[in-house]
Amino acid sequence: MTGPRIAIFAGSCCYAFFIATFLIPSSGLLYTASAILGFGGSLVWTGHGQYLTENSDSETMSRNSGLFWAVFQSSMFTGNLFVYFMFTDPEIDGPTRKIVFTVLTSLAIIGVAVLGLLRKPPQRLSLGEAEGVSSEDKELAMPQPQRQTGCAAAWSAFRDALSLCVSPKMLLLSLTFIYTGVGLTFFSGIYSSSIGFTEAMGEKRKSLVGLSGICIGIGEVLGGAIFGMLASRGSSVLGKCTGWPVVVIGFFVTLFAYISAFLNLPNDSPFKDTNEEAYITPSPILAMVGSLTLGFGDACYNTQIYSLLGVVYAKDSAPAFALFKFTQSVAAAVSFVYSNHIGLHGQLAILLVSMVIGTVAFVYIERRHSRTKLQSAAGESGLAESNFQGLVVKSRPMLTYLMTSISMRKITNQIVSQGVLNLIR
Image (cartoon, rainbow, N blue to C red; front, side, top):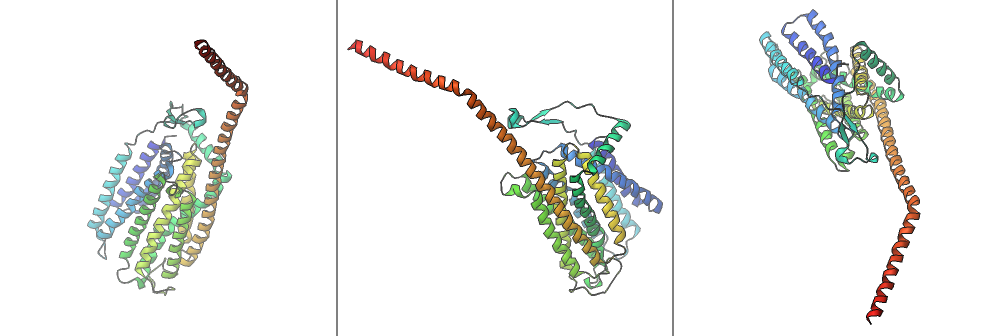
C-alpha cells in the first residue's frame, strides 16, 4: 500500500527509536519500544523483500540476496566487536553504557537517512525471445499502473496474503520458515548464553558470549558473500552453487554445529551457571567454531529463501515476504517460550527435526520449480521448431519452383553460350 521504500524508511525509524530508548532506562518505555520495534520489523523486512525483487530478475536474485545478507550481517560482526571491547569490566557502569548506546543510536540515525535516499526502481516488462526481442532489449520501461489507495489497497493486500498463505507451495515453504525462526532463537539467545553459563569454559567465559556473537556474524557474512559471489559468476560450475545445493550445504554445516553443542555444553547451561559435566571437556575453541558454523548455516538458508521467494513470487513479493517473516517470527516467539523450560539437549532435538523437515520441503519446492521452468522452456522451444517445420512444409512447392527455375536458367544459358560459340566458329 505504501510501497517498499516508504515501508523500509518507516520501519528503520522504529529501529532507531528502540535503540534510543536505552539512553533513558525505563521498563514501560522499553516494552512500548519493543512493540514498536516489532511493527517496524514487519515493515522493513516486507519492504526489503519487495524492493530486492523489483531490482532483480531470475538470474540476479540469488546474487543480490547473498550480497544483501553479507552486508546486513556485517552489522552483527562490527556491533559485537564494539561491545566486546567496551564491556571488558565485570561491572558495566552508567557512562560506559551511555557511550555504547549513543554510538549505536547515531549509527541508526545515519542508516535511516541513507535508506531515505533509496531510488524508485523503474517498472519493467520482460519479453522473451519468442516475441522477437533481442537480449539487449528484453526490458522495456513501462508506465506506472494506477494503484489502489486507502482501505481498498489494504483489503486487497490482506486478501492476497490469505490466498497465498493457504496455497500448497507456501504451506510447504512454511515448514522451512518455521525452522529459520527456531534456529534464530537458538543462535541469537540460547547458544551464546549457554557458553557463558558453562563454568568449565574458564574464568573469562562471560567474555566468550560477545566473542561467540562475533563468530556468528563472521559466519553470516562469509555465507552471504561466498554464495553471492558464486551466484554472480557465469560459469556452469559456479552457477550451480545456488538454490537447493546451498541449502544442503547449510544443512550439514549446521548439523556439525548442533552435534558440537550437544557434546560440548551441559544440558542445563541455558538456564544458569553450571558445573555439570558435558559429554566431552568443554572447549572454548570448539564453541567458537560452533558459532561460526551456526552463522554460516543460517546464511545458507536465508539467502536461498529470499532468492526462491523473489523468483517464484515475483508478482506477489510483498505478501510472500510478509508471510515469511510472520511465520519466522511466530516460530521464534514460541521457541523463546519453551527454551525457558526445556534443556539444551531437548532444544537441539527440536532443532534437528525441524531442520530436516524444513530442508526437505525447500529442496522439493525448489527442484519442482526448476523442473517446471525447464519444461516451459522446452515447450517454447518445441513450439518454435514446429512452427519452423510448418513453414518449410508450406514453402516446399515454392522451393521446388525456384530450384526448377534456376536449373532451367542454367541449361538455357549453356545452350545460348554453345550457340554463340558455334556461330563464332
